[in-house]
Amino acid sequence: MFCTECGKENETGAKFCGECGAALNSDAETEREPEQTSAEAQPQSDAADKIISGVSVIWKIIKAAVVLFFAAAFIFAIPSLMDPYHDNIGNNESRLYYATAGDVMTDLIKEEFGDCKIKFAKYSPNSVITGNGNIVYYGEEYHTATVDSYVTVNGENWHYQIVIGLHDEDYLGANDWYIPSFAGLKEKLGIRVKSDVEECYYRLITFE
Image 1 (cartoon, one colour):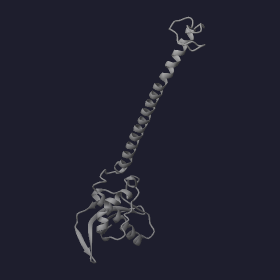
Image 2: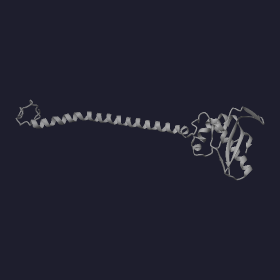
Image 3: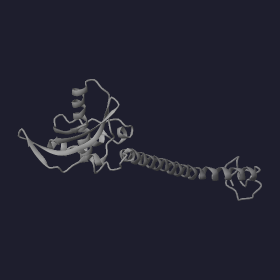
Image 4: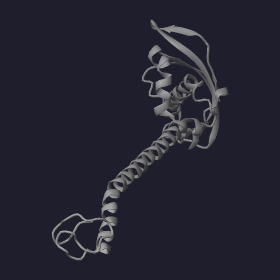
């Protein structure tokens, strides 16, 4: 215990200072000790706060990562979820043939009927017969398939059957074409999808 007058250290519990005789206030000393203890404890409290804050930040990052993961999974699953046949991986070539046949038939129908309302049946895997082999036409090779379906012209249903031939770049690029063109959504809404095939071989078999 230190004297508040002269600063001399005295024994604990002494009433008067042994150096200058001043009365010692043991209560004031007792009050100062908890203050020192509190000051010593402050760094520990700051460290605890930093740990809690760090854990909170890490937890927020984990939650954000989980949300982003499920959001990405949902976005990539949309084509499959929206695909009415749930076969968007296996029938890309078939769909491209069907869409190309729709483009060709649109041109042929307009040549015959002029300006008219045309609505094609939704794509069905059973409408396209693939594996017909290749043909050479004017020195160019085409991969062929037969499309057998229906189209509504001015409210009247017409059955058509047509052979479609695709060049290598279109045939081999069917997988790249499918995702941006279909994504399942347009078919789900009943919107006809165009093939974007600039040049193809075709042979109309039936339109009745």
